[in-house]
Image (cartoon, rainbow, N blue to C red; front, side, top):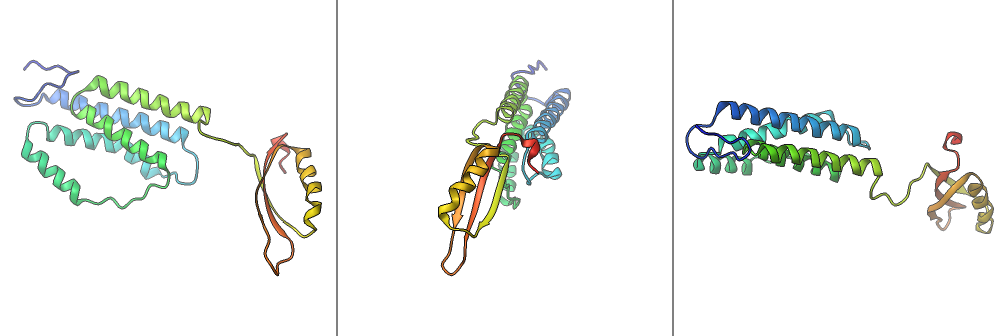
Length: 202
């Protein structure tokens, strides 16, 4: 059988087992690459080892599904029915995590349909974009080194003195909140500080 790796033309006849193995291996390597990018760029408290493992397994499973449903329309509809019944109850806390999931699914589909050049170029391009967004902190409007929460028991007319003190040690001072209630002495203040010397934060 004449098989073209980069076109995936195997609509008739049995699929080449070497091509199937190559597709699954490419899906695995692509998932591994995206998982490494996720581990490097992730920040926050929502990190999960199981989620990283799923980024590796998901493209392989998607590629396998695409290989199974390649030549059988009935099987394709059956698999869609199964996916419609299964309900994934895991809630992703970070919006960017959803993007990683979509990236692995698309790469797995490309590998499963034996469009290997699309899978490789797509994986490299998506990984490069993720790394660019992480390295440049794209989308961040402000950066602060410290958040100071305090209770101000003096008169509000004396707040400029506090502001002068904070500005003496900071390049940027932003009052995030100021709350006072009736029957409650003083005011609760929250300041975000961009320090002149972060090493002297203590």
